[in-house]
Amino acid sequence: MKKFLLAAAIIVLLLFIVDKTILKDKGVVEQAGQMEKYDKIEDPEELPVGLEKGNRAPDFELIDIEGNPVKLSDFRGKAVLLNFWATWCPPCRAEMPHMEKLYKKYKDEKFDIVAVNLTNTEKNSGDAKKFVEELGLTFTIPMDEKGVAGAEYEVLAYPTSYFIDSDGVIRGKVLGALNEEYMEKEIRKLP
Image (cartoon, rainbow, N blue to C red; front, top):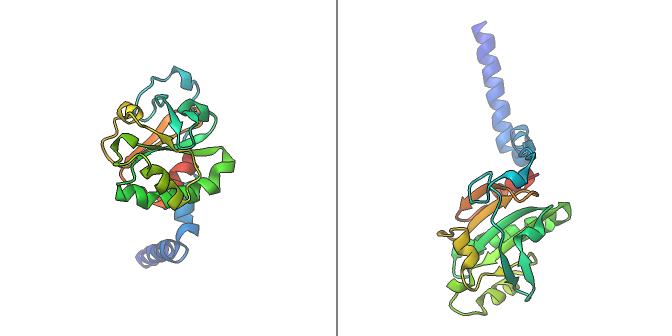
């Protein structure tokens, strides 16, 4: 009996190793982790507005890089990755191509990215526009010229990201750069 249990344990371990190394993102372990979704909240309007997970995200209105007014509440009905960034921030630069790739992949599935440039921290007013053109970014980029949204969201680290569900409820917050795998996992979990 002990030999049978030992053999079974070795087989399970080998299957796990194959799953994680050879199959990688197509393996059973990874697929199981990606299937979990946040539960839809019954009465999201009853939740308090705040910055904690489970709070409704504070609304703001800014002018985007094209000169159009943008409110966070305009995106209700869509899952949103709300990102605060600046051009002088190397981790911000590193994560932007991943954000663009995922935006293109999920934009037709009721998902959007709102990447607030903390314009009040930039050296020159045109830096953000050059940065956006250089990287070919196509998602919404509001300009926080007076630091109002950055202060409202208590941004102390660059970048700072919030994962917000289609009802405007914060489901996750991350300080620092995100890799593509983590971003996609969180996006797929948003109802």
